[in-house]
Image (cartoon, rainbow, N blue to C red; front, side):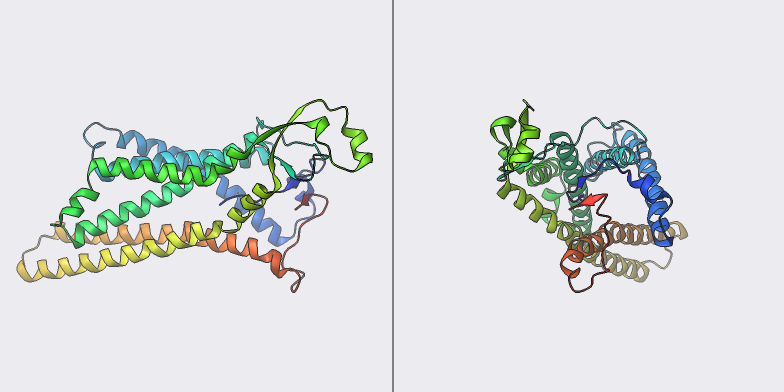
Length: 323
């Protein structure tokens, strides 16, 4: 999921702060976060081996395998950046970008961290690309079973169509998460200070350029984050619909085969059962990964608006997080 913007006070390290103060709920979050980190690390290696297999000459031109290649590359990029960002938060390795400590920029502009925002753009876009390609693969698979003799099925499942659709989805999601870069401005900091005279005196000697975006663009970026849970929930709803249709059609085909051939081999029966189990496993996994994350995003976002009525619904240490 997309991370929401915070200004960090680096005098206090998150993990050091909670080391002696976390309760049972904090422990669950802490250790599950570590477990998730190592799962992401493991997933990267699985995807690399998957890519090696998919790039074999005899299968890499198959439309479905082309989509799988796109999914694997997207997932590897997504999890790779996630592992890097989470590792730097834990101080396990060096952060190649620094968060700005400039605190007196004029009010109509917001400091923009180019390195961090670039990583988040790649992470968010590759995750969405992977999700869309997964749904597209499920759609092609379903249409091929429902309408095996239709011309449009052949067209949408061709090698050319797969490449074009990967390109279109990639361009769309990269632009969706990067359009704000078009409004970046480099401001000479001493000429663009805030109106607070005391803070001005402390910052006037900083002769540097500051990367910033207009405040109204920053508001739109935050609104994009508010909508982020829809990017998770909608695919998690659409994917099982395709899977249910596919399973229904496969069950119908299986019944017809039984009627026409009583001598259906045990091997064919086992393959049919394995396919059904695989589709169910993929559907449940997809719903858990995207659906639960969408619900989590929804709760994180809306808890701010609930906090006035339910004061204990969200807690942030003011010494560490300042929204």
